[in-house]
Length: 148
Image 1 (tube, rainbow, N blue to C red):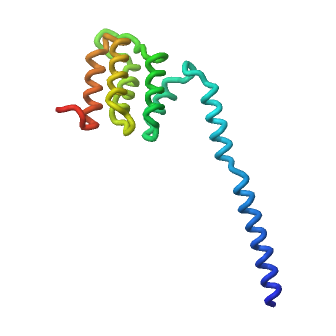
Image 2 (cartoon, one colour; image 1 turned 180 degrees about the vertical axis):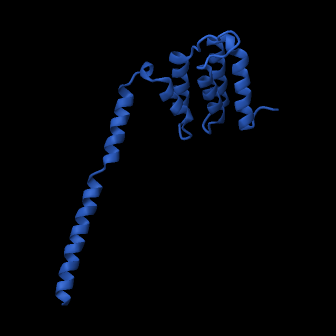
Image 3 (spheres, rainbow, N blue to C red; image 1 turned 30 degrees about the vertical axis):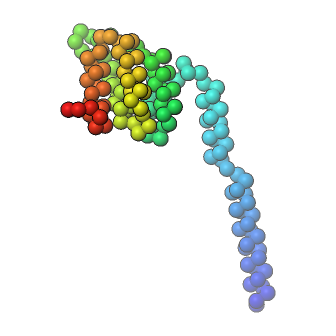
């Protein structure tokens, strides 16, 4: 009875070892991440949509360098806001205001990053200067930087 138990235990351990080795060698997440990285490297800056760039800005784990890159691409390829309709703001303006609020509250942002984006957005859209300033103030107040 003891020898049968030992043999069954050894077969079970060998089977378990085989499963663990298979899991060690097969990593589907690693292959998927490598494919995503290659796809991003092949993609030109101008190919990114505003929504993709906004998702980078919105991600709290985005590094300062990646945040800088995303904001530069937004300004370069998506920086022009459609003109106002009389006194009414363009619906697209609220997307930019959301980006401005997000970068003010992002944990990896810097003052230079915020000011650079603010300045570039104002230069490209002079008719929205007041609104951009308002949303910058809201973002800084939410972060606790600007005085009330």
